Length: 48
Image (tube, rainbow, N blue to C red; front, side, top):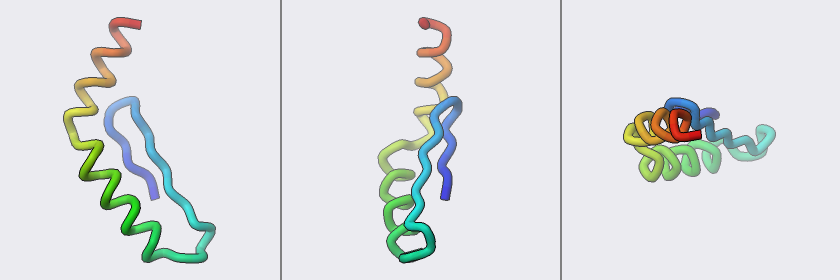
């Protein structure tokens, strides 16, 4: 599973061993890395 927030890409994979665990981790990451990271990564790109 992949989460994209602007230029930030987060990926989680259990190689099929536990789809439930993958889904759980992705949900936690999506909650922490919300849509505000789209703006944050855009700003960081400009500052770089």
